Length: 254
Image (cartoon, rainbow, N blue to C red):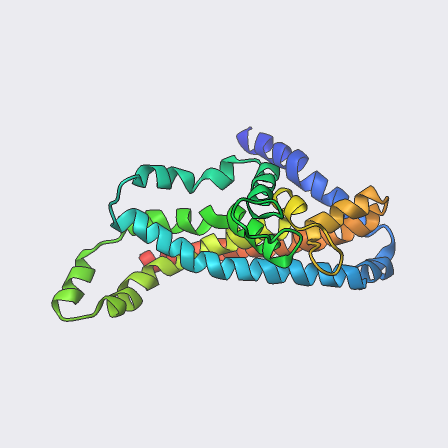
């Protein structure tokens, strides 16, 4: 009974809408599908989207691990507040995040830094919304990590760098990769935080999600569906890779 209800619910909420998008994308046949993906504007949009997502993931993998390390291994005033702020991008509506970033880093921002309507603005918005993923993936692993091996290695004269590379990093790597995969999937589909800050300039600052919205607004639902199917396929591949990484991590722990 429970299995049947779960299957019906998932079908209505996930499988049927996805099937509808795929059906819309294939309405014009394979030729129309290729033509939509071969458009110079679409190619430029996808190149920016994937390039920005990879750049954001690289930054988050390093800074997210560092932030998690500080939250777990250090003690400082206001630590609980900082720990709570990490989850703010999850709770804050992304359009509000975009408006906040535009107010701070736009042409009239108080900081004197203007990245609005530029690729730097796209990166800034994506960095903001994907910040928690690596932090929250690495943090529980660090909390459960046995520190006896670190202390033993230190007593034998191992440097801090060697201890991190040989003992800590191998244990953290599955969590880092898992958080990075989630951040990548979020970055390629992000809309709210970039729609205001990027300026949506074709061939320059237009990302895939905003391009899809523009295609729908102009009546080209098939073209929008084609790009959507590509993003869906890539997101599914990332999630499958994430599951594989989690299984690998469990075998490593065992």
